[in-house]
Length: 62
Image (tube, rainbow, N blue to C red; front, side, top):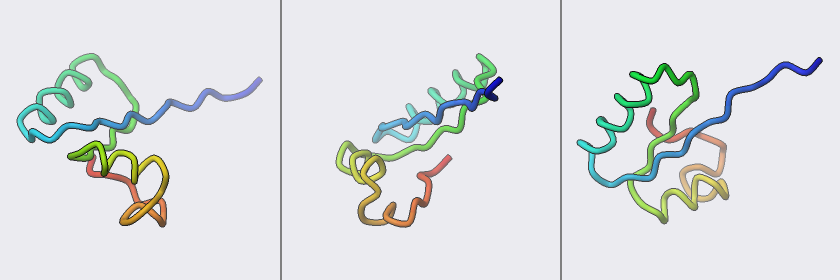
């Protein structure tokens, strides 16, 4: 039987207050997923394609 691994969530949101609110909602729902936060669509694409500051696989802010 294969062990299940939780999926990571990429949150693309430029407003820090909204980032906090969304992360609080995830916590309230007891989601165990890792949440990576980036502030723009371009940064989100860089994260997904491991470009720029994410080239070495460094995660976004959690």
